[in-house]
Length: 308
Image (cartoon, rainbow, N blue to C red; front, side, top):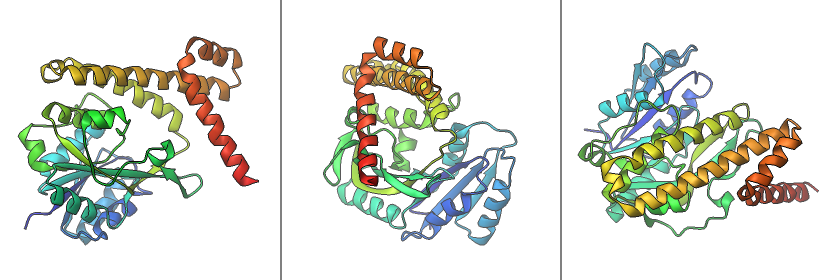
């Protein structure tokens, strides 16, 4: 019998976390699953650990690149081996809540949708604790199982998602990840669904745990945003997007918002390095970052008051 869900897991130097990530799927309440690990030429014991997990449980399959080729190539390889009715993605240092897959599958099938996503718990690796959820932290309060287009998700900035998607939909539209991107390649696949009027069902309960690593947040985040901007511009050149004026307007708005975020990241970098002249220059020339700065100050004040 084919699995209900195929979980795609690209992995690179994840020896510390991959066992926990795989276990979170195998020990979940939905047992009919396939876990596809693609080791992207790790230099640590990731492949060895994943291989042992595959020996211990036949629901795990492991593939390996002979050289590092990036997460998009790893995801595409896994997609070619996916047998599940549904496909979803799990980074090798993150994990699922036990009920996540069963809950999302039941909700999607009850409502007859082809894609569903949930909120995301943010886990601080430094503090070893959950520090909030991705969307509640931003004050978003969405109704249960609200149906939204990809355009709706973009307008609400609900783009950092790990959705569950029917595999037949991916095959119908020949969807894959662009292999020339190191960051933002997942957005490309999700945004491509916009051209086909795919509706997402949103569950506001966080069931995906995202591990935040403090040693790489600012640098990688800036790179991620820069490549996301390039990726969106590439999408805008594609005929099936270019002819949809609503999507063009939304994607252009998102590019503008991402540029503002990049400016804020640069501002924070100069502040942390005590380069106040350059940080002041950015603030004066990019006043649109001021709301972000004010929000950051207020959040720090709230934390400070709670400590007292």
